[in-house]
Image (cartoon, rainbow, N blue to C red; front, top):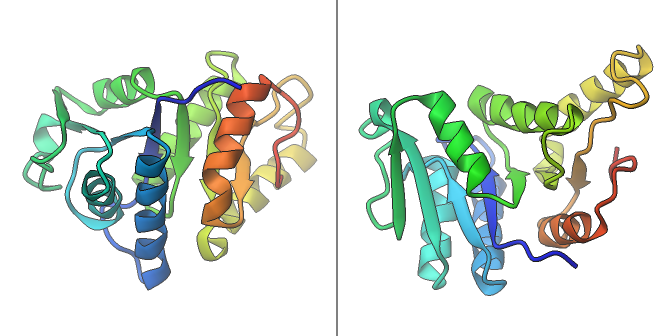
Length: 194
């Protein structure tokens, strides 16, 4: 099985409405640290981003925060991370996050979380990488997105040879095992849960 050294976590810079989102971020942070997997994330200290990063740190794990200069104050850059990379813009941030990561996990979040997840999915669809992508479907948060992907597939905009490779974890306990299994399998088959 391939070793995942670092996982990039996309998630909200706010906590969201449901307290279970914050609890899920804490659980993922604990799981990463316990399994000696580093966190790569957007570098902020607010919302789910801050919760997952602080939890990794509190449990002895390694955190790499990647944040564009213009967001350092707005997202209150987390100073405690072992590694902080300040980029010139969002494009550089996303490329650095990609380069530093062996897999991607999407917790609940807003448009930025969706955009980053979709971009990594598109790159995989176009054969630019085969790193695992896992949606943490906390409280069915990602159900509308999953339905949209299924609709695109039904309408043949996602065609044979252009499959979308995303695993859907229905529980937080499934997130890391799914990422590790996908990394080890090299499988390009239909994603779990979709």
